[in-house]
Length: 436
Image 1 (tube, rainbow, N blue to C red):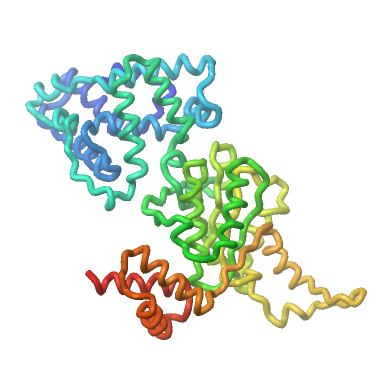
Image 2: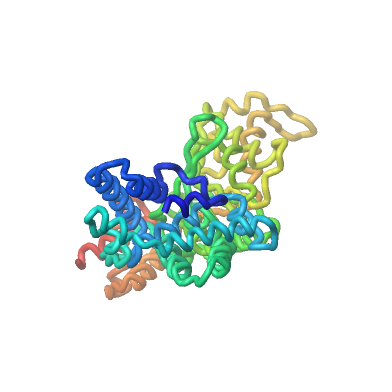
């Protein structure tokens, strides 16, 4: 195996402690008799356990070795895979190196571990190639990733040669991309510790809500959809601020919009207020990718002593570098003006041509003005609240009459935070719990 792995060029920058590199080293040491069989067996079992952990995390099944190799291929970001993500496969010298790598990977797919098992007196890789996992789709955090990996794994295992292997892999890159951005919808990030970069972390358990699940607010949803559709289609689009009362569906709408447009290349990166200073580093890492990114800020607001909003202002509009066309900022807030205003803000008011102007107030209001689209999610009326309750109840399969639902929903909201879509959902959840 080590001879095969040594021929990999484009995909050869794997960490030495990766499963493939460790197994390659074990094969070399076994043939060279540099360790006892007991020590080598222990090393093999350690990698088998790691394979099982990966398989459990991603719901792999049938042939775990093939699924693991496929996972390596679709998560390895290199000049070839990134280019295929952007423009697809084209003729060029780099294809020669890629096909050479795929020839090696084809050999790895077909690798026979029988000699190793016979030498060490073990039986594990045979089991891993005919693995039966107990998979419950509803409990899988990585179902989306799992389905893609297993589908491509089946294709690659059946490829006749490196040319067919090349076609399958490059078609996947063009359709889904490469790396974590190709496999996941939403991300958070952390600083890499150097102050010059960030590390992205996939959000694997994102709520699977769709816009139809949000009852009411049709005009608001249409405005959001129209702007997002223009964005993913490469047309001009605006940053968006969703503001209004709590519990009205602002955050739900953002999650739903990502789910709706995920298959068209839309991705979301969630950012917290204390991370605004890293915004430029985030943008630097995603501006050249073949995806459309929404940088999502939930419950955005600032107290008068907080100055992080200045980082945001510079990124949205006004910095030296133009914001890339594949990035928009979507934010939600309970405040229309985002930054808390005080009477002291008016201390510098000047009267000019009959107009009252305050530099402090203008600075604070300038942030919200940089969102081209503002959408108001106001608290529903009593009638709208009952409409939401009844719609959610019918969708959940509850058979309680409309009149009884209205009466019970009215009692519920009086003691649970007042009228809102969130209150309605909590009421339905309570009813479903009572039925079970």
